[in-house]
Amino acid sequence: HIHMINTNFKTKNIFNTISEKKSKNIVKINEIKERKFLKLLLKIKNGLPIQRKNALKQISTKASEFGPNLIFHHVLPLIMDPTLDSHERHLMVKVIERILLKLKSLIRPYISKILLIILPLLIEEDNFSRIEGREIIASLTKAVGVATMIVALRPDIDNVDEYVRNTCARAFSVVAVSVGIPVLLPFIVAVCKSKKSWHARHTGIKIVQQIAVLMGNSLIPYCKTFLAIIKHGLIDENIRIKTITALTVASLAEAVFPYGIRIFDNLIDLLTEGIKFPQKKLSAAFLKAVSCIIPLLNSVDSSNYCSVILTLILEKFNTPDIEIKKIMLKIILFFCNANLEKTDYFLKKIYYSFFSCFWTKNTIKNNSL
Image 1 (cartoon, helix red, strand yellow):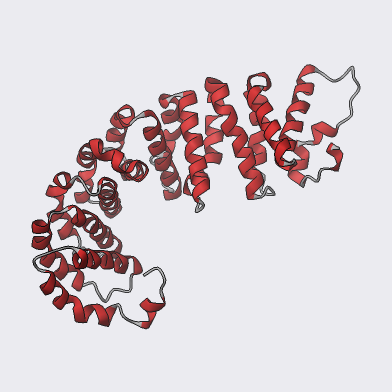
Image 2: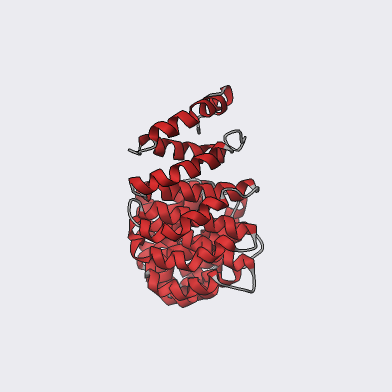
């Protein structure tokens, strides 16, 4: 009952081959194979759950028989079809995921096209879409190797479009985690210290940030190495490099919490000074880095930095920036909960300013605060 299935106008063109009636003498082996594949693809797209499951299994089992040319010739345009809804697109992405490890090196000519479709998943708001994207990038890396992935992603590293660089950094972080940090470390070092373009340095530091987000406490053995690679960015002439470096330091500190204070010892003073920068985003990034490192300190060091940091954040209490307010609240919360020698002094000093600047109608109504 293939003719009864409702297909959209672009999708319909792809599946026209199924309904075409040809003479038995004209039909060739390749056409039979194509029709068979398209029928399975149509069952995955529009069929019942049991039909989808069986069709996916058949495509996965017979991936070598169908070949990458036939599969990607139909699946990739179908995923790019704007008339597909999110669920149908998810099913088509699942087809790609199933065949990657079956075809292995045969998919190399199609890597750029696959990445064009998969990379946007890495920055989707939906967590499941991001996980799916990461799984496909990991499978793709295992199938074609690290060198091929570097060649495919390399042009995006110094792209002027921040969206492209962001997706590229996330993809490289997945590659690094899937094959092991030591394998990709020399490449990351080269990109972070690139002198040709600040865009490349920005992407390199962003890769480190995304690795920290993905690995969590598993990053501890490499944290010192990564910090050594990126710390030059804190004194870079470019404001964007300074900002992303401070945010990456914050991500590293969050990843290794509650360990690793010795790794960050030398950076606290530099980060504290950075809070004084007049640029809001830059100051907020340094403030966030400080807020993530403070919880790693012991009680004595926390007390010593308490008055210094407190003086700096008191100056910013009147800021309208919501992100800076959130970071300051995080610092205040830590000092309130920590068993510090100067807690009474701390509370007395911020008491009036806190209620006058934060306890207002706008902040009370703001659920994010």
